Image 1: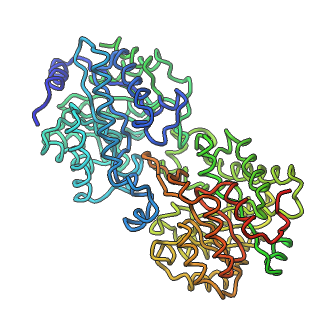
Image 2: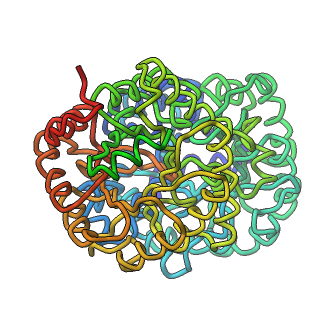
Image 3: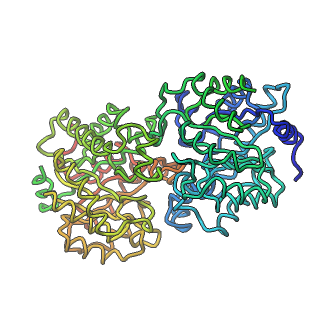
Length: 306
Length: 317
C-alpha cells in the first residue's frame, strides 16, 4: 500500500517541525468511565469505545490510536497448554477472535473520525504492542516467530484502513526491528515507541542511540517513548533526542499500575502534565500525547502547545 | 474442623464440595479485580452462603490463582513494581488470602454450620494453571507455597485443597508446604485432553506420589464432565479417597492478557440436572468427594446433593 493522504499530511507537518498531538489513554479511560477492560469492549460496547475516540479528536488529537493494547492471537492462546487443549476446552471462536477484534478496533476509530468530521487531518494509528507482555523482554518470541505474528496483525490493520501502525510499549530493539521490517514490506507507515527505565534506557539495557541507529535506516517514521512516569520519559528523551534524525515524541503514564486495573492519582492534573510535555517539546519532541491515566482534558492541554 | 469430613469419608458417605466461585461472581456482574476481595466482599460471602445452603459439606476460599507471582509477573521485576505499581502491591496477597478465609468463615458462622461445614484453603499452581511448561522448580515452588500455606493455617482454614495442579513436581512441593504448615491436604489435578495430567504425566504416578507425600485425598478437576468420569474410573481402587469436580462450558479468556480471568461461555451446556446425573457416575465408580468447577453454580450443587440422596447432613431444610 502507499501511505494515505492523511498520513502524508501528518508527516508533512512533522517535516515542518510542527507539533502533532497524539491522543491519550483508551484502556484506563474505559476503566475511569466505570467499565471493565477484560475484553477491550470492542464488540460488546462499540459506541462507548467510539465515544472515547470522538472525545480525543474533539480535544485536539491529530492522531488517534486504536483500542487494541496487547490484542493478538498469542494473548488468547497463552491461556492454554497447546492447540489440542484449546480446542478441547476453549471458546470455539478463539482462532479468529483476535483478528476480528483488531479489525473492529480500527473500524471504530475510523468511524469516530468520520462522525466528528474535524477540519484538520486526523490519522488513525493501529496500536500494536509487543507480542508478549510489554514489561517483560525476557518473554519475547524468537525473530522468525515474531515476524510471522506481526505480519498477520499488520495485514489485518492495513486491510481495515489504519493510516499507520503505532508499535508501542516496546521493550527491545530486536522486536522493534522485526516489526518494522514487516511494516515496511507491507508499505505501512510505522512509528515505534519504547518504554524507558529511570535512566532512559530500554528494559533490555540497550540505549536509545542504538535504537535510533538500528531503526532509522529501516524506515521508521518516528521514534517515541511511552508507558513510564513523566520523569522517566524525560530521562528517555535526553537519551533519544540528540541521536534521532526522525521526528521524536513522548506520551507518559500518570497514576499507578494496579493490576488488572489502574490507580488514578492527582499528581499530574492537565496543567502539570502540560508542563512536563512542554519540556519534551523543548528537548525536540514533536509528537505529544498521553499514556495510561491520561484523559481528553490532558490532551486538550497538550493541544495548546501547538 | 476436619474430623466430620474424615468421618463421612470413612463411613462411605459422599462429601459434597461447593461449585465455582470466580466464574459465578463474574456471571453475577462482579468486575473481576483482586478476586473481588477488596471491592465485592458481600457478593463473595453471599455466594459461600448459597453453596452452604445448597448442601456443600466443604466450601473453598476464593483464592484460585491468587499468589504474589500473579502481580509480579506483569512488571519487569520487583523494583519496577515498586516504581510504577500501586502502593501496597508487594504484601497485598497475604491480605487478600486472609480476607478470603474470613468471608468463608463469616458465611459459615452466619449459617450456624461451624460444626459440620469445613473450609478448604485453595492453593493452585504459582503460574497459569493451564501452563505446566511455566511451573517453577521444586525448591522454589516449595518455598512460595509455604508462605501461602502459613497464611491459610494462621487464618484458620480446616485443610488445604491444591486445585488444578498441572505437574507432579509442583503438587509435591505444595503438598510438602501444606504438611509443614500443619494442615491436611487434598490434591486435585487438572486433566489434559488425553486423560492424563495436563503435563501428560500419568494419573497413576501422580496418585502414588501424593500418597507418598501424605495427601488425604486425590481429585481431578478443571475438565469437562465426561473427562472427569473417565479419570474417576481409572482412579477407582486407589489407596486414597478419590474425587472430582468438572467444568461446565468453555473457557473464554480475556483479550487482555492476565494470568487468570474466570470467564466461561456456554455454561448452560450442563444443566444442574444433567451435571448431577453425570456426577452420579463418579459416585458409582467410587468417588468420595464431588463438587463443581468453573461454570457451575449453587443450583448444580443443590442438584448434586439431591441426586446423591443419601440424607446427608448438608441437605437444606
